[in-house]
Amino acid sequence: MDALFDDSVLPRQAVSPRPGAYHLPGWLNLEAQRWISQRFFEWGQGPVPPHSPIVAGHPMSVQTICFGWHWSPNRYSRTADDVNGSVVPPVPDWLIELGRRAVQQATGDAKKARDYAPDAAIVNYYAVDSKMGMHQDREEIVNAPVVSLSIGDSATFRLGNNEHRNKPYTDLYLASGDLFVFEGPARFAFHAVTKIHPHTAPAGCGIAAGRINITLRQTGLG
Image 1 (tube, helix red, strand yellow):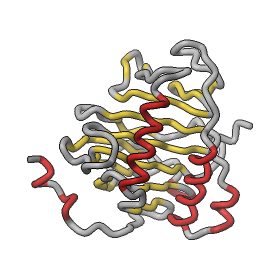
Image 2 (cartoon, helix red, strand yellow):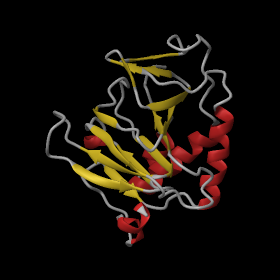
Image 3 (cartoon, rainbow, N blue to C red):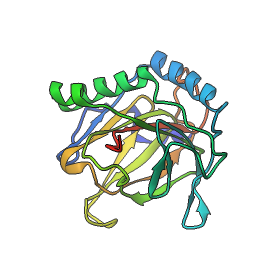
């Protein structure tokens, strides 16, 4: 019933809610969503299993898998020291290429897309009751684009300012297949996921419930 009363049935156009932020609805077709969902279930087999990072002494409500660099609060490492100590696998080549295509289509800047070299991917699974509080992605030391892909149930994504967690901010509806890129003046914006909308995953996307979110980052860590 929830799907009958949200705005997912309304026409959605590409928008830039603030300079350096780009929302491209429906960027991944159903076939691509289904294929990536299959990879997601394969990734869950290791070498580092899905886990809930501990923030301020409490586990996050999302389940996380990392590539390239392992993210734990406030740091990156090559090994998953807070899970099982295993070396994390590299970012898949196809995902790097997909990230470059995303930057090209979002920004229209061919050079920026060619230069984009994402060396970390954080894959989060949101159950229907999961959320993520306002935060900045500040572990990276370069201002390179963050590419975010959504598959499954829709989410309310809150994009804020660069200075603090309070207003002004904009709430956006991210549906299955949507692309969101933030870079330049929006790269270090506070952002959050305030709600997962159950029963909004489209048939054929490869996941029946919950949301898969893949974020690609260029860390600058070498």
